[in-house]
Length: 67
Image (tube, rainbow, N blue to C red; front, side, top):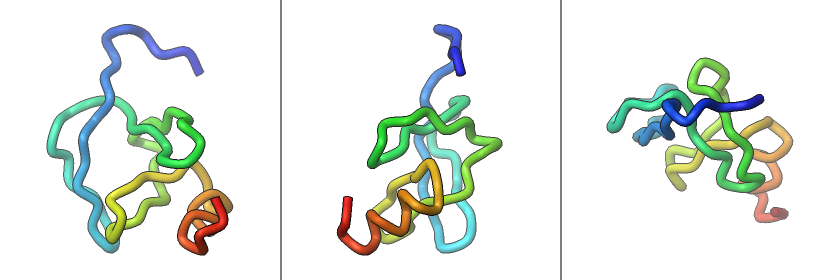
């Protein structure tokens, strides 16, 4: 997915079941893979580690310490 220069990275606070936007943007970066995750597609994160993940497999590996 090609991002235009006007699309900025959002800053979020991750809660147990939702997130709050601290700084508006169009996407976040996966903490493990570095992949761009559009906010409308963000489904996996860790409230404890305050990180976003691109897929359930990546989230599971990270939380099990296998990344």
